[in-house]
Image 1: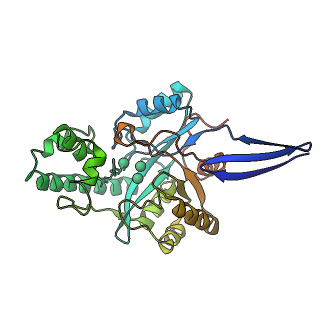
Image 2 (image 1 turned 45 degrees about the horizontal axis):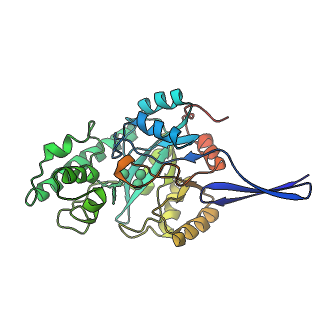
Image 3 (image 1 turned 180 degrees about the horizontal axis):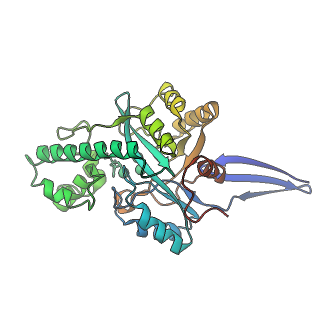
Length: 311
Ligand code: AMP
Ligand code: FE
Ligand code: FE
Ligand code: ZN
């Protein structure tokens, strides 16, 4: 009968089927977005609302990946079940390699694995101390207080520059988050302070021990700092890295080509996502997608099942 060829294009699997001499093109039906944030970290909507927006955007599968916390999982799970949406429980860890900030996605890990909780505790403390120090510097020039910033994050665990940005917006210092990041919160500015984070290969190992599936988030993102080089990705791979998030708006075309070549060479799967932050960023749900093949690898390798499962 016919032959089916599959090629990855911007996260969608495009199939060309030749059936009885005719050719037709079709796209796989499952829409999968594996990277979103809620107000539990630096998104602007509670987890249930992120799920409702994902449903409204027509997604079949969505991952909630708040920064350095899984506190949104319970609410997201209940909402996803009610909506008939499949949820991947994830997290985006703040790590560092060769002095560069590296965001590492962890999917389907055991959230009660104590060594991981210990590391998260260190990150939360470092994040708080860093926001305190940055606010202190900013307070010399702007009427901003630590209390105002802290009040913007209910749990406080993943407090960061986005929350300082929101307070600067509320004070009328800048128009929006983007302006705050381009201005007073810029890493090369006078108010910037770094915070401690774990080395990426150690985090990759920890995620694996917790039963999670580690994926390098937006590995070709240029805007902010230097890009992590190939040898660093090889080291992450040796530590147990599972995939690269290639289809992400922060990875420019030349980086995507480089990452696809690397993924093929290192046998890493490829994902795509929006990195939705509600009103905190222009990123639209479903603007980049992940293939069902990659999702199935996450299901096979991860300790936790998907909420809602896969048909
Ligand atoms: P931090 O970890 O506190 O240094 O802050 C980094 C976070 O700020 C990331 O999680 C991004 O989601 C967010 N971020 C970075 N740049 C921007 C931007 N231009 N606009 C809005 N949010 C941003
Ligand atoms: Fe963020
Ligand atoms: Fe990120
Ligand atoms: Zn993110």
